[in-house]
Image (cartoon, rainbow, N blue to C red; front, side):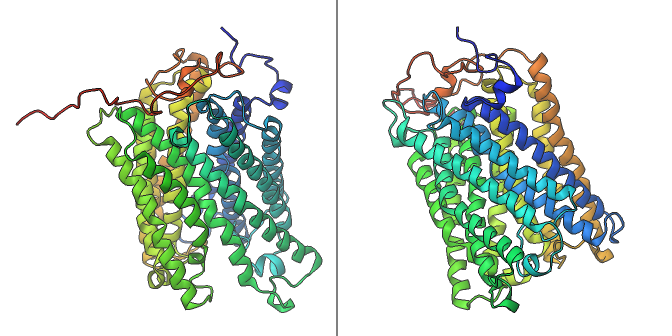
Length: 536
């Protein structure tokens, strides 16, 4: 038996210079976990500050810097890279029966770029912070902010090249390294999700690089690009920023959809309902997502006709998302469902994503958005999608493939408790924020009238539970590395090529080149007799 990828040349230098996609996935897991806890520490300070109406923990400027740090780190150094670069890196070659990604050295470079970009952002925090918010809105960020805007923008700019490198690698790998018998409509839906995400990465990230370059250029050289006092247009910044940042929402959520599909079909013991519809829904979300950026600008003074157009398109993009929710539920219908931790996380994703999506329809309506814009309703909506949805999906995938990644089994009961605790803690944290937004609490304020306090207290109490739910997996997954039982090659009886190799896999993934015969989701073969319900 060939030695696993974990055991070969086990030294720090061998890991820092590796071109093995599995080891690079582990490096991304370590770095994104670090950034997650940095962003989480900032969120803890935010919730402590909002526990009382008066701003008595942080100064006005300090609060602005803390929520900017939270947004910048969480969006660009955790949410964007975590599933494509951790699970995608580790699993895509295994799911395709390949030995590695198409460009192994580019893959390693992408991790270093992500680390360097994150280093700039953390350095900016240690040097005094940045107070513009994670959106860097002009003309404040170009003409008035005295904090380290340029340093933070450079960090995000560098991380964008990491994103582009990952996207190129995934697309070329899917096009050129599929095994014999795996046509486009025999690929696992997780592969489709990463492929659609990679297309968005390639098309949208250069726009972010351009707008950040213009921002830094205006700050350093005094050119009149966004500053109206110099003949610039601050609304241009919003158009360019949101042209990237709304598709970036789908960079974060589409990979989670792929993970959840794999988990639900496995623990329902049924083939995916409507495979082709799921594929077209992924691609439709990726395409339509480029045409809805203007719904962030209903209050910015854009044309009424433009607002109506963006409103209509924002309702349209909800249709393929609804198709996916329907197909997940249909896959579970009459399935032999078991409630392992990864399934609990996946079901939590479906519920929280649906809630976030439905409240997004409120914000897509122009008259309703005029009332709710820049309130805590928007904060709650965004976190239901990104944190409740995407983080739940990441934990679902991490638990599902943990035996394959490490060769060890984690304590299932502890993981189930953590999954339930996270769902409860998340709702207690963010559902009160819908109410706060509806009754008029603006976001990004650290002092507020006494009438809002009860909702903030509930939200902060939920954040304590949520923090415990996030810390628990760190404990028992690390515990499993030492004391966990050895995992068989396929502990969940799942389909897919990644389960046909050892746990953990050898360096080159497979001892023989695999071929594909039949469906990739072979949970309910056609020849099996259909199980009919018993007569009453």
